[in-house]
Image 1 (cartoon, helix red, strand yellow):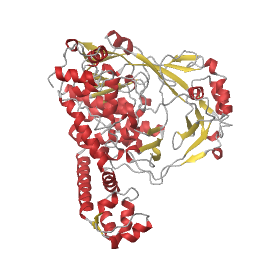
Image 2 (image 1 turned 180 degrees about the horizontal axis):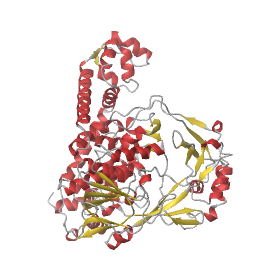
Image 3 (image 1 turned 30 degrees about the horizontal axis):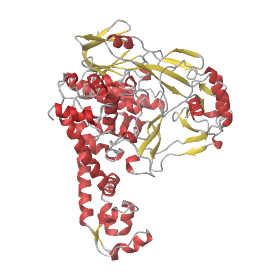
Image 4 (image 1 turned 90 degrees about the vertical axis):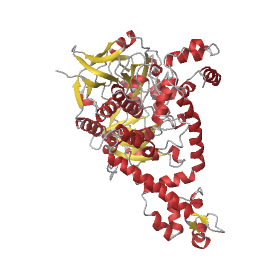
Length: 620
């Protein structure tokens, strides 16, 4: 019935979809196993993609040839570029999405990849021989052979849903949990833990009074995630903002004695930066109100996602509290919020390729590694799919450096530092964030994607044209001279210091309050020259010019640090022989088994003194 596959991907969430697409597009025969074909790429939580740091990850996925950016663009309701009042390293794209269209677009894209097959059933264990994965076994007892497996189980591994004092097995609302895999992996020697996440109630938008809320419109000129030719939005739907108040908090507190979180029924740690509403009012008792984002679920549905009101309190407490929020007085609830506990496997058990250390050709991606968020899951799936294909074809794994991509930061953090709570990406986690901007993701990664076979020839050609245009414009701005008689009148109107002599136009662009738009005003001939270039090219040149010294400093630092990654460590290196190592460092190094001195230096618990001892010992 089943042929032997190259790669089997278990789970069809954001990680699973990217893993399957990547491996298949690189040439592997892929089987995607999911418990429900109707929930492929389900947006289990909020109907939105991107945001601070997450938007940068999505653009990186797209630049490499992944699909999440394209799917997000095709299902957009609204686009906003966040943090425009800050520097370009902080600019972060975010979309509000049509939940049903998002899932439909992903499924259609996967069905259009000839190398992807589907099977609807629960996978209960991986088949292992001589410490190598050789297949997957399903609940029906079917054994399907393969060369590599990517596990992307999300919140389904022994998932338990909590609503007040009620709890029951489930991986998502109205979907059963997955069992068998955790128990088998523990038998094989893996360490596991429990985490939790939550979701808010869903509300009938027809029952809300929007006149009591603040409207939040999309950008006037909406952008997009993908560097391909996806269509920009022509029409947008607004979101709305309202606030909790002291009466809402009082109603919620009435249910604290039945809270599974406060009463200890939930053992797993939840996401620190996305707490439940009961956690917010408990931890921040001094705050009189908390912001609530009212987000539409789609173009045609009336369902509303109440962002900021995640809760696992009893449903009657949830309803009593939510009707005290301005605009929600007559709210009708579609379903209550809930918390969900699930198994994960500490990611220090992985190699940098996301292959497990214990079992060859077995890869983990997404929430199984302790992360939270669609974007974090999707990028891990992409990398696991790429590396599973590379491994079975005897090619080197793709490991992105911290200075190359937020994806590199995320995986490096997970493998070398681990996580005890759901890991979420922030710009503050990236020490090279001026280099890792959302606007230059294609310049950083598309050539890599093209070499892998994920980014098309036309995309590479477009990228090379863009690079040439950027270089050409930068040369022009260095060579062109602005004269006092030509530009001083306009400079005075712009409240900018006037010139006393000819200067390169580049010097004017370095002024904080002058951008490309202002340069066009200074001189008609200059305006004519600039108009020959695309907005993308103009933006790149403006950022490169204004932040030149910062960019150069980060590049030099990255080069210095990256030199440590050139020094490989033998897989069987005996750390017990190095007596001068601290006991904590020895313990961590024996567990994580770093592949390079650079990776070794980034492991939590390994001090600079330990690094020095080892580099001397290894003769580096």
